[in-house]
Amino acid sequence: MNNYGRFFNRGNDNLLTRDKNESIIKRIILSVTLVILLFYAVFFLLAPKDITKYLGFGVFRITSDSMVPVINVNDTVIVVNANAENLQKGDIIVFNTYSYNEKIRVTHYFSHIDEQGCIITYRLDAKNPEVQIKDRWFKDGKAHYIKSEAIVGKVTAKLPTSAIFNFLFSKIGMLFIAFMSLSAYFLSKYTEESKKSVYDK
Image (cartoon, rainbow, N blue to C red):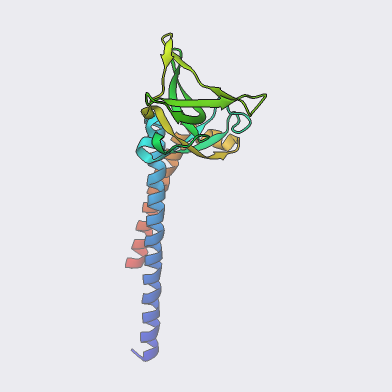
């Protein structure tokens, strides 16, 4: 084989090696992304109230108007896991509490931790935003106090009201994400095997 032939073969080998390396990197990125999406969808469907505890973040849709105009009905908020001791007054938090006998998830302002270790929260008056209205919660006819373990997390970002967001972060939307993640994974595996058979020829 002449020098030109050796150079040509070496170039082909380098090209194939580069293609294989790029394929491996893309496959790793895709796999990690799909695993994250699938895990999130599973946790959202099976344990939505504990999602920030296990994954460190969560996405929730607002269903009440108590935070208008800062957060509107059907807005989507991104929540990260937060320690009550690290919160500051004015932080917007998501927490679980009771409205009489009904367990609810609320998004309001954090005020402080009182001497009994209870979380004090508030909302702003809709007509006069400078007025803070202290929250009061009740369960079985008695006052209910929020403890640190009831905090779901701290709101770090707000997504505007959107039919797409509302769908994606609904149970049906999460089933769709889980299905598409699995489909993409098996499709990538099929593509990988197809490319491997081409390289081996």
